Image (cartoon, rainbow, N blue to C red; front, side, top):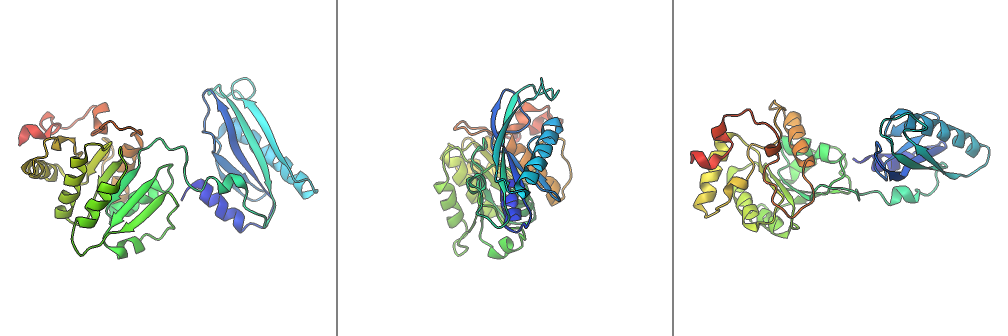
Length: 307
């Protein structure tokens, strides 16, 4: 769940005066982006506008505003900070903060109403196939990031195992299981150009149908398949048998180098890190590993060489 959603939920049940601190404008190098926010109360502090001296100063100003509100003043104020000159932070940029008083049981502030979904994401739309252990762990990470996710599985009971409430930027879709692969392929066909696809279903046969549909689009920004090098080699051959000439653009194994372990949470962390490296683009970015020195034997770097 995003910080904005958590802040909204907290405010809805709060019975004390709070102050919503929000990054309103930035110039130069700053620790957080426009829209970052935190909520300050006498007994609560949630969220972050970047930490350091900036956040310390903001918290003290929020306490002062809470005291004024308790004395009858209903305030919204603004304050600009020069991070280098006045606060001694190495960022050196400038930040304008807004301080909005939140009285108990009042209407949700506009700043929270307008940020229920991420609006500043640089990541491409993510289409995730699979709601098993790793899929659920990955969604738990993506739920906290500014991205848009379509999460697809034919097993409704697997979605039910995800106990956290899905934030608005993650949409779950139960695919029709009566004709295996048809509904999932339809989701591939309906996805926007430049989408990033992550495939980790319960069936290798279904994985193959989905990967075939993705590679036939030619407009994906990323196509990743969970699995071992052995699975990767077999999929390369099967895709070539289907006249997919650019099967090498399928990333398998997925994730980034240096994160090892097979626990679902560890695998999900590695995949999320690789997705975070992607940028919105119509260009094919088929391997985020190309920017790293790969310690694996050279023959594994291009699987077409061993087929």
